[in-house]
Length: 114
Ligand SMILES: NC(=O)c1ccc[n+]([C@@H]2O[C@H](COP(=O)([O-])OP(=O)(O)OC[C@H]3O[C@@H](n4cnc5c(N)ncnc54)[C@H](OP(=O)(O)O)[C@@H]3O)[C@@H](O)[C@H]2O)c1
Image 1 (spheres, rainbow, N blue to C red):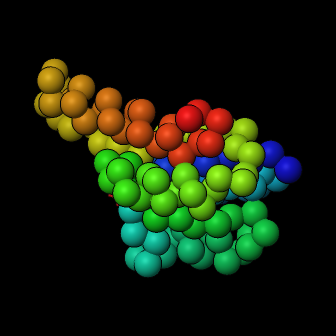
Image 2 (cartoon, helix red, strand yellow; image 1 turned 180 degrees about the horizontal axis):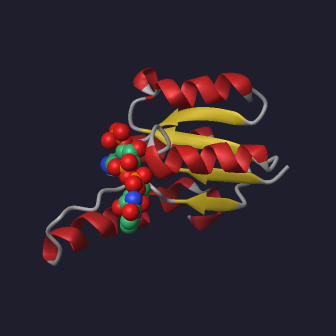
Image 3 (cartoon, rainbow, N blue to C red; image 1 turned 120 degrees about the vertical axis):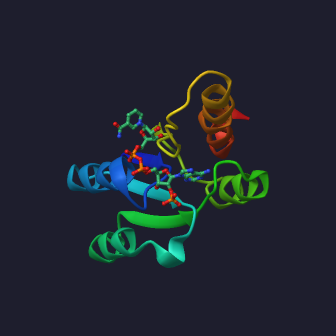
């Protein structure tokens, strides 16, 4: 079974990515900031208990990145969708500063990237 790690999965595009990959038969490690309040994601996970596991991850939190890395250290991950992020109205430096950590930190969760 092919496996994806997707960040920011409690709502929006991330949640839809989970829904679509699961429908296509993938196993999904679904990361979000607050699993306890991720109602739609938890509802989906309850319907696909063999395919979805939900993991806490704020992509700007180094400790949580390390914890997820440990939790998935024995897993093979075929695909990372690093969806978590924001698209603020202002661009320039602010946008770059936000996008860069969001774009690189979750990569450390993949054992082969180390
Ligand atoms: N929709 C568009 O037209 C569009 C266009 C260009 C790029 N994008 C990008 O596509 C991605 C998803 O867009 P969307 O429309 O689905 O946005 P959204 O509805 O605002 O959802 C953003 C998701 O990212 C999560 N998130 C934000 N900061 C996070 C962090 N530090 N750690 C973990 N999760 C975090 C949010 O979690 P919380 O619920 O906890 O806040 C939420 O799940 C974003 O990266 C956005 O920049 C979207």
